[in-house]
Image (cartoon, rainbow over all chains, first blue to last red; front, top):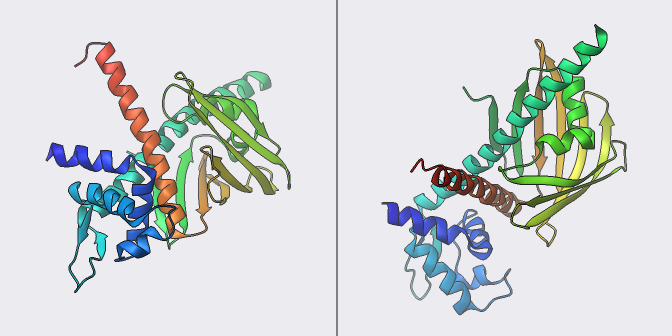
Length: 113
Length: 159
């Protein structure tokens, strides 16, 4: 379990792989379609896909000669994890802002006395 | 108890709300006066904002530069679009990492609630992919914070 999570985080550490996940979040896609927006060859994209598949974030379906990829359920959970992380960063900022506001109020009260 | 809410809306919006125990004027000023912004808009521990330009008027420039204790850095540029003192701000921003991210339109409202302020930040991204990428960037910074907390624990011998 811990190994899978490590692999998922390592897979997410690369911007191209995050962009691939973002694209797959919109729906099932072939490798050829996935390669289009990137300045990369299909084998390079396939390499990234393999990392994502090994991490359990992406699954492959066999459809005749095509191998369309889609987001695995754990991939969707990974997206939710991103939200959680962003929330933590914001919470840290706003906790600091609470302290700044407390100082401002204090100064204001000090002035009016 | 968490005072912050963060949710996605439709394909392209992210909406954040937060209550502050201070009047709208103070919260608004903390979002528009550089010397105040520099005290809190810092992200994970270890980051500072040595450069902060914010001109809260229509067409006014924004530029925030962050750096950490390892010499890494990135910056944000933007323009103020609408400014209604103490109640509403609309601006557009982009991160430079160093390539600029697509424009993020941000509407921030400050409503009185009891003795404090309910702030609502509504971000509008060009498309779903950009939104996912932005949320992913948030993740990187969150992870950085987690790693730094871990570093601290290790140094202090907590583990």
